[in-house]
Amino acid sequence: MRWLSWMLPDAVSTFGGEIDSIYYVILWITGIVFVLVEVALITFLIRYRHREGRKAVFTHGSKKAEVVWTVIPFFIVLFIAFTSNRVWLEVKVADRTHVPANALPLKVTAKQFEWNVTYPGPDGKIDTADDFTKRNQLHLPLDRAVLVELRSEDVIHSFFLPAFRVKQDAVPGMVMHVWFQPTKAGEYVLGCAELCGLGHYRMRGTVTVHERGDFERWEAEEGAAAGATQATAPSSASEGGQSKDGKEHA
Image 1 (cartoon, helix red, strand yellow):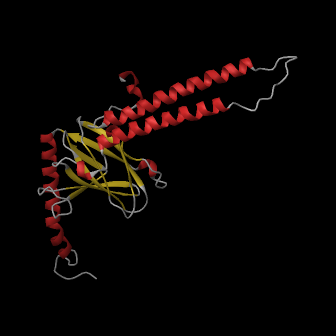
Image 2 (tube, one colour; image 1 turned 90 degrees about the vertical axis):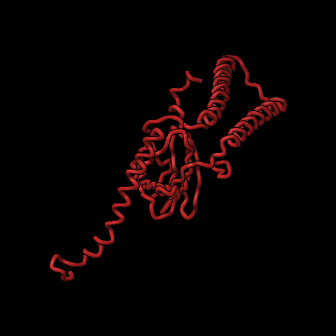
Image 3 (tube, rainbow, N blue to C red; image 1 turned 120 degrees about the horizontal axis):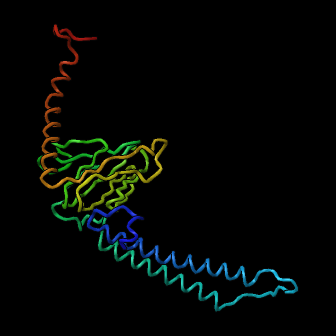
């Protein structure tokens, strides 16, 4: 299918090929049906065009033709359904029981109009004191599974990573999960695929897939910077109510 690769960005996740296979199956089926219908339409236009002296003939229809054009689409749709289900069972994008044991946990919180990505600190766990958050920046390690805990603060958003073949709605009041594994280092696009308000068009982020060593260095540097900021925050707050001479401000 490489000659059709211009239709989709290169897949850079482990299950990208399986997702693409569904697309190409549907493309071939609908493409063939389209051509057959257009050929039939042109044939009927020519064959049954108006001619002088030719009378119109009334026909009630054909039960045989009705059965044929009902049964054939039924089996085509059934084939697509079973093919899609097979791929879905192999991929299991939203099934946490099939996530690799060493998956990197991330929390992604969507709101109008940005993505806030929370990374685990040295303890490797989310919702602990050493977490740090980046706005519109999704950094991932190469060849390691990533488990995203997806939330929304306001309206329905859609976490869309076209190069990874990942698209999952973020629904207010619900925690959604999606996992994938990058297979190629580089920079990619994070977008919102749900109309979420007037600023929907600018709700974009950058996805950076690092080599394993580079990601660990980046994570350590960002975690250290976040830790230093948190360490200085209390003293700054306590000094904020006083002037240099020790008197409190109004």
